[in-house]
Length: 106
Image (cartoon, rainbow, N blue to C red; front, top):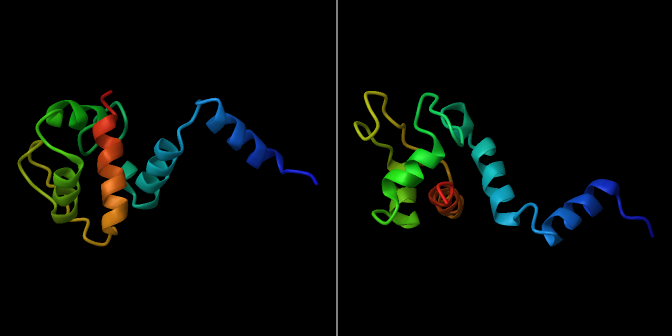
C-alpha cells in the first residue's frame, strides 16, 4: 500500500514537532473566515497583528472573552477602524482562533 507523499510529509512534520496540528488548523481557520484580509501574524494591516493582540491581552483576557469580542465586533480598541461582528463564525471555530491568537505572542 502506498501513502501519498503529501500525507506522509504532513504526518512526519507533526510527529517531529515541526508543525502543530492546532496551529495549522487555526491558520486554516483564519484563512477560511478571511481574518487574513485585515490581520497578519507580525504586522499591522487594517487591524492589529496577532502578536500585538496577544501582547496587549496577555494575562488580561482569556480565549473565551476574546472569542466573544470577535463575535460581537468592537470599535475604539485599536484606533478608528472598527472590527466588524463575526457572528457567522461558529463558536468552536471562534474559540480555536482566539486561543491561537493569544498564543501568537508566545
